[in-house]
Length: 271
Image (cartoon, rainbow, N blue to C red; front, side, top):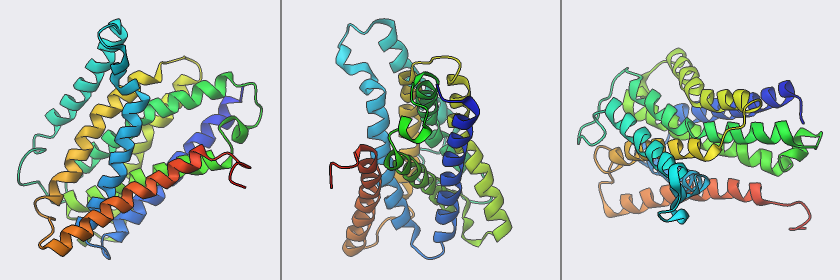
């Protein structure tokens, strides 16, 4: 068993720091890169995250066919309820026009939606910390490469939140103070589920697949909010622009793919 304080603060620091840098990077990058391209990049990131998270839920227990019992029903219901909840809170999701202005409401919802799967990550981390016989925190969680993979994921996910902030608040004209304040609020919304689950999960064993089912539904909402503006306000105006948008989408997917490779890297295997 690893000490609670050591595990908790390591988790808090790695999640919070990565989120802060990702948000600030995206919020300030919007002044130099077309938002349509940044949206495509973020969509590529979240497409990978969605596949990853639905896999962690056991693909909503699809392999059980019709024999999964109450566990399967609960997982599917949690997925559906979470998606419907976000769509109910944001009635503009399927509207051809999306709201812009100083309102932080939609970026906050998107931040929560992307962060909810952190409930599963936090509880899984806590379970390892509370049960492992290994005394080294780094070794218990797969070494430095696995740690770098996690931080990279959080950085890229929070970048997607920062891009949504740019789009849905018209934040390009905001002052530095407003940008930093909004980044702090969004970082809190993004990291809180993960840190909360880690704190509780260290003492109470929880099946993380339920949380990943919630995260799958929430990520569907986030994907819709990212994809919508690409095909409306920030759509490519010509064929060459469409190609560039596709390249940015592919770049986002490959960036998080490279981060995932770090998680699978075993020292010595590649020389």
